[in-house]
Length: 128
Image (cartoon, rainbow, N blue to C red; front, side, top):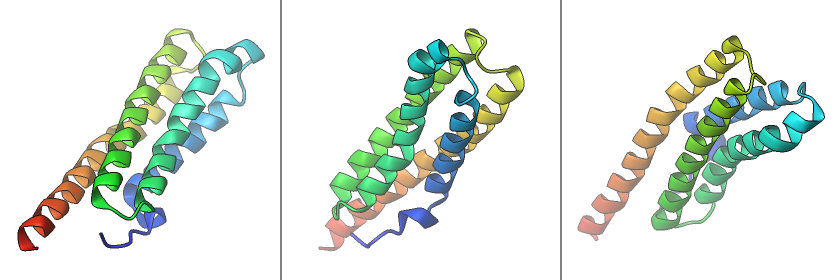
């Protein structure tokens, strides 16, 4: 597996943007909202980029793909907590729309990147 500089990956940059915007919103919530939905939402969003970074440092394609799948799961978890936050009126429609816009770019980009890593692993097996 070729060494990947995760900081240059679009999926990582989008995950940082999403996590930072979520942090900014949640930091304004009251104590109860922060302790319940807020912490879950922040952790899920932070986990996306953390798993992309950790997977890139593992050194094997199977590990990298596994961590990218975990990042995708964290993205879906983030979407769940985003829905809860909106329905409980912790986030405005505008904030939710802005966050969903990042998610709508990140989700297919992450899936495409995972497919490309999987294809690269499959083609290296047939060459060897």
